Length: 334
Image 1 (cartoon, rainbow, N blue to C red):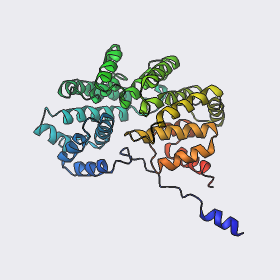
Image 2: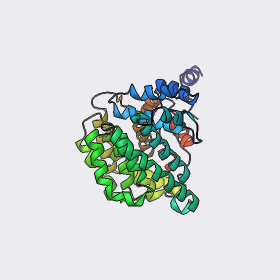
Image 3: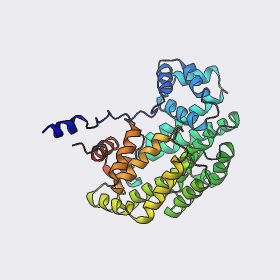
Image 4: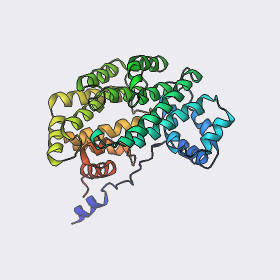
């Protein structure tokens, strides 16, 4: 009896899931609050303080872009009126238009997306593309305008021929930039404009060349998640689909590549790059699908409350629901 009580008392406590894109960047959360209240200088300053940490800078731009008002006359418009050629403001405006484009389309497969959604997606992506071209010149070292241009290609058909050129420019600016390569791998996947082979080739090439500790060393793992979703859960999550995904992830060759990615990523020590929690979420999903319970629990211990990837929904129907269910499974909590 006493043993059961002691075990019950030491059970881990489920953290309240946190889906804020700012993740553990508390300074960013505070600056966003000030910006939304009308202080656009706070947005400018939090991006500027990231300096040449392009991954941190990109995260901050994306979070602020999501918070930018859609209606005219908001804090971003006031900033652009005051400083129309400010590279941060122009890049942020391009990112905000890109964010709006993605939301206009939605995340459903093409067959479940309306003509109006596609039209809005294209119109906003074209506007984002034009603003990103301006940002490309105004911010000659920042890879974020390149990432936005890559993102606009999902909707702007006549720009897709420049994919390799834009990716090369992103690499010139920041050789292993996480957001640029993550966007490029998405572009090359079968559900968009490539194939399984093209997706894996780009992910593996990038990971093999990148230094240990870089977030892009985890891109082959992301490619496996995309592959499993496309093959077994495309358009619908089902019990049979999840069983097939588990079988796929438990294959010896997939396990070897998973372990190789993790070893290279973590070998310099605990990752500290801005998107590390995104990679940790991918890893938790992969360990859950692999049935590696204790390792999954350890990853959740590092993740804390941060639900940092939509990939949970690929296999479990809901991003937060998948996170919570697998946290409980990994930690043996009912």
